[in-house]
Image (cartoon, rainbow, N blue to C red; front, side, top):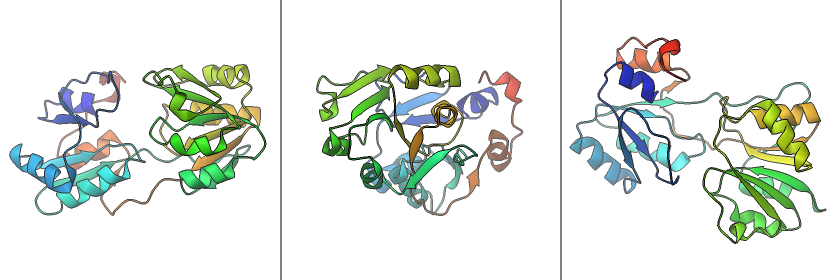
Length: 238
């Protein structure tokens, strides 16, 4: 999306939460950090004369999406640019749960080897089941205490990932269960496809409910909403 906006010379700001130490560079003006809730976001939009907001946050960044809907309610147009969720296919062994607590409860009581593929924000609850080995895949290095997980190993890597690599990862670490959020998209789907090929059970955390807003699933749809023609995918460098 950032490449498409830049190529089309649309005046835009790329806003990130700032949780990653070295975020990927983007061809737009970039800002990082929170806004200070709904009021802070409203003030920012007014100060920068923003007319359109593209909410392209992670599907599990529910608070930001809620704030965006409220902040844009009066004068700013809002479009949620969303990844289509993953859908179970033949051969998948999914157990869908509503939240982190549901995922924790779904883990076996006996010791297992779990690929805990949920990022670093929600790891603390899993210290309640420290009998398991947890494989983590993170963008930034893990702290020395491994988030309080007694038996854990962190791999530092940035997606997108491929099936061959994830098959090797699961085999090398003798993973018995995968626990993931239904982030959707293609960048992190390889672990789900690898689990299907290996016949591994997947505990899938369902997406949180979000407030009503117009939704687009492609750059073309977003550009139509902006009143511009989208550049060709071949020219976006993605």
